[in-house]
Length: 134
Image (spheres, rainbow, N blue to C red):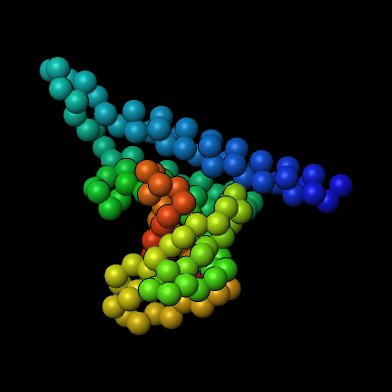
């Protein structure tokens, strides 16, 4: 009964992530328009979804803004300012490095800290830690 419940929760988290990505793709297609034979961007779409497991945000704009933003908990500290982060929404583990502002302001990140990560849409196993909650 226990493993089946955990597996069901993992599947629910994956479905939630998949639903967020599908809605984000629909937002992106709605933000562009074909006018005069060329593709023009009407607006920079962004989406923020709150679930029981956590928050997930998707924004499309400049190069750095093309990311999926999720909350997670640092599980392991690795060398060279790298961390293993377990995401709250789908319980996936990603490899994340700290952003320049956190490095510049000497903000310490320890295992057990709640953080916000930006995940690249190209490689969903790597990310950047952009905020540490108190």
